[in-house]
Length: 506
Image (cartoon, rainbow, N blue to C red; front, side, top):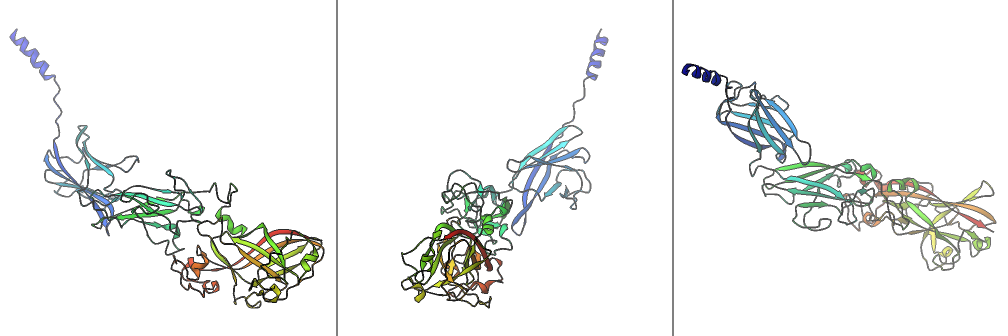
């Protein structure tokens, strides 16, 4: 009985499975940023085998898992081998003569797509035993880490708490929340580069300093939210719709010179509301087609040349008698117009109102004259020939300017009253015999356009010079700036036709 019982026990014990051997591992991890010129361009991870069993090359797999923000985690699967710096992500054993990872030997991994601000973890797996032998989340040592862009966004210029879409031509603000895990942030080092200005304006295309000082558009000083705005590069009439998808480059530096760069994609949508009390607006990109200079019904009137051009004795041209037009030396037409564009318009002596008869194919012109003295009769010295020479287009001279309103393109610049009376350009041969007719009036604005977003006062030296344009001052003439070295400072020839009103003469 004893022999039988002992035999049964032996058979039972022999059938019990042998326990799987456990791999014991002690690893010291280290993650350092890789810098180039002070800018972090990648991470270098080193794992040192401090104790436990040696890891064999075939069953050992190393998983590098990374995640930034709310993005999907990315996993890089690495096999164990000797260090190979020619790989896309260099990795491998730095020490020893084989691919077995023994105690005291280091394994290194470099990845130029990762940053120390990402959430990065390492997991070592023995696939033969189906065991996780070691895992840990990595952090760079204090003092080696660069600043981190926690968030970045844009907002319109309404000043509301809500973050609103950026509408074309209405301006925008840029914000970035920046922190430094080492607490050594250089608070004067946050800059934004508006790449949309490359090749157009050297001032606006250079890095723009962002502020966290409480001055608008920044709201709270010292809260690590940096703001950019209230500058010519981001104010109306910018941004145009063509900026949608444009790249803004951001960078920040700590006191040790460690730098972080990132990018932001600007999104611009069609404006849905505007000024003028009309419930709608004309998009800024359409002004070039309909013309910058505009005139409204009711802002044209007629005086007689024998009276001062400032006289209150005026009459409307829409329905008028030939006697009114021919009295007191003839008629002087006043056209009150405003510039709704973003370039100052300098007008010359070819500016004209053309009258076309509805009863024949003929017509005639009345050219611009220069206002001189509003208190004496217009044909007695109150007006004069417009400056310039009709036979020399390069002798560009101007006596009147259509200024711009940088802050509100729809409101436009201060209105300018254009006086037309002469029968030939740059002349004083005023006076015309008007007869019964029905006529159409078209206005030709002729002259030159200055650089974008420079008011007339800025061009003549009485204001800021944001693009460092040369040659500004009291003697400024746009014809001298057609080929300026700075493209954004160049002037150009300008001409625009305004189909205006009908005039019934009886």
